[in-house]
Length: 171
Image 1 (tube, rainbow, N blue to C red):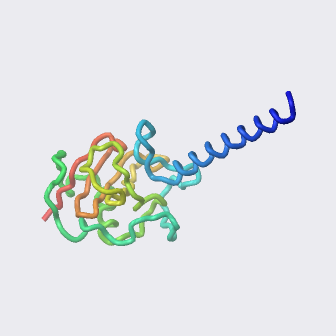
Image 2 (cartoon, helix red, strand yellow; image 1 turned 180 degrees about the vertical axis):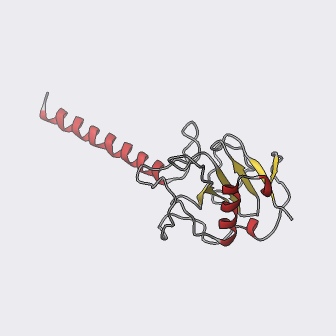
């Protein structure tokens, strides 16, 4: 193999690795994966599986409670509904944390939820934020989440984004 060809192959290999690393870093930095990838959120290996109040981080997260914490809204989704009082205790506790703006026990609580599954009403990116609902006995964040929209709409999933129910506030 000529030295020129060897340099060309090495340059191509370096470029390929750089592009792959860039793609992986960008995918890891987003709360959601693109179409055909894993559902909207995955815990990172460095993330603690047990809840612990965390300090502020540079990840864009909601710092104020959503409108849902301030007023009840009608169901804009057409999805099945569940009363807040019918949710598991852990979900009600998470709703209370959302209403007061934290602090949240998991590092990824409050990050943008991308709605790549397309189950929730279509909104601009950044409208929805997701919060962990702890599952007793789970070693990680589990499958349960509350997704809160900026318009006051809140949704519960207990199957990691496969389905959602609109949360009706108890009056």
